[in-house]
Picture 1 (cartoon, rainbow, N blue to C red):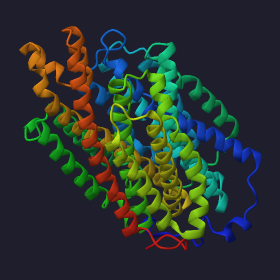
Picture 2: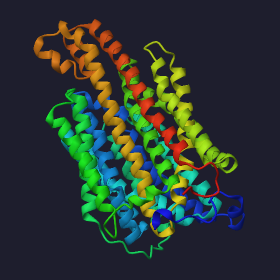
Picture 3: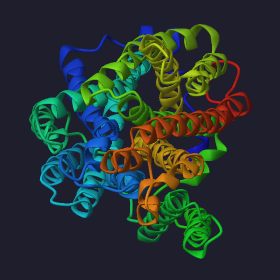
Picture 4: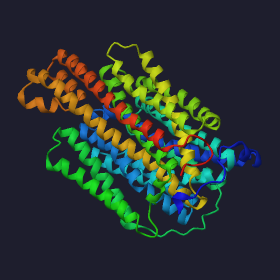
Length: 522
């Protein structure tokens, strides 16, 4: 059974590393192409964050509401997560190189569409199409890395590859801020096009054409259940937070419906001969522990990035570029943490290294409780470095642990699972924590809105940005201060929720991951 197949020797063991010849220049160049492609796809997870304030502006942007802003982020991550299983299966059947090229082309075209969207509906739809492209790209990239590199060199390559996704977390806001300083908001999507072209050219030249010999049948029911289930579940969470009406049928209905469909998905996948995702993989303790910890880490990270930009650009009044520069130091930590963790795992084992790294990352989510309007920005930058260090040290070894449990013909499915857990975590992080942020803010700011005309109070209370716009329109500067204070309180509450949920990832690590590196735990 796939979930129970083990490697005879850990990929990171010294014996394996010495038995394999050093990678060639062509292999390293192939890794560079695949890393650039992954960085481009992951960049789109964070580059939009610095543009949220601009998109909410009816003049400089599209006049997007809070719900539309959340959906502009979530439409990409939801489609991405929902179709990753399909992308992995299609890659295993038709070849990861072929799927990579098609996905990269689709991603580039839909990026241009998003850049020139005339309204928020077009933007949300275009972002969803971009998610389809990414769902084909991501399983293929990691599967190709695992195929090109073997033994101890694979662990190193995956460490570099994993660091790129963390690097995108920092590069997204910085690149987005720089573009917004000089160009219109659509430039943050148009920048994807030249990278997509470069990745396609590089793949045609360097990426091997060897295809998997295993033929997978398509599983339409599994794809439908997983995609629709995830989509309507998070839709219910987003709407609940936006409306602050969790007991209403239009909120609780989608949430319960999503849970039912996902339960049916598990039931179906256990019984079909060729599932789009083999849920039996979770019988492997390493696979389960690594997957859950990754999902919960990205839950906190995505939520923190969401409210960080509102804190920096809204409450602190920074420009998009200044905001991106404040978040950018997270890259320093990622670049140090990912390769360092590979060496530490070989010496101390998977569980202690990943548990400590996760604890470091979780502590930074709680760290937002100490930020106020007067906190020196240098402390925010320090927090970003520490956060990056923890994130990098979590991603690299957990990704390698997931891939080490799989035979070569199932690397696409394993890669899809790894990336899907990240995307589900990110989507739920934005949805849940965005909902908490919105709900707490609305409760905190409500008493201050009595100075506004009754017909303006509801719109002004939707978000801190809406309150500031109302304050400017009615010449009430004191309302801006009250909005900022309410936002800080909401951010503190949200950061506690982010840290508490992400802390469960440490529990998953301690329960599921083995004590040693002698192979995946059974």
